[in-house]
Length: 220
Ligand code: GAR
Image (cartoon, rainbow, N blue to C red; front, side, top):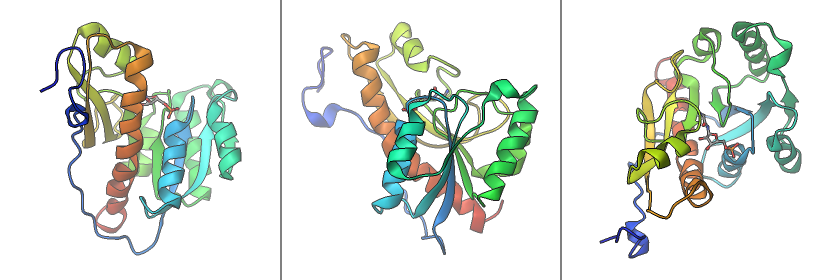
């Protein structure tokens, strides 16, 4: 039993990840990543692809924010990175056309929004269909949109987590691929909760990419 002050044992750090056994794809997936911030999920994908967790190669990163820490990570990891600044485009659609062209030129199979803090238009959704994946720091459908962790803390829920899902034009509303649950303890703050949620994001996102990649061989 966990007390309300914290975990009684490591097992009480609830983690709900279904056992996913997928057939191995005939070749490594070509993965493109879009990020706006720290880039820890981007790095987790690169690590999973290089150390056997994900049969894939991360072939390119796009950031919309030139200050994004993800750029430095890409340099350190030797992944080609490009800045496509949303401020230079007059509409979401115009930006998304440029993204589609960029990732098409890299022959990307699965495109991942790894902390991409932009709402995407149907242009991107149509181009990638069931091969466009987002990671979100809550147990959807709870706490959609920005500041999801803050919203969970403010709401006083005892369990939150993260969700990897397919992207549709509605924000944080696409079909759920995989979720992990993370308890919130009474003394939690963003500083203590965020790293626990992100650790689970890094775990489930590679699995979700492998799941979305199946759509290449089995429809869409
Ligand atoms: C992640 O926690 C991700 O779930 C969140 O941004 C963070 C990016 O971290 N995404 C959203 O809130 C999207 N609604 P990272 O840059 O270190 O990967």
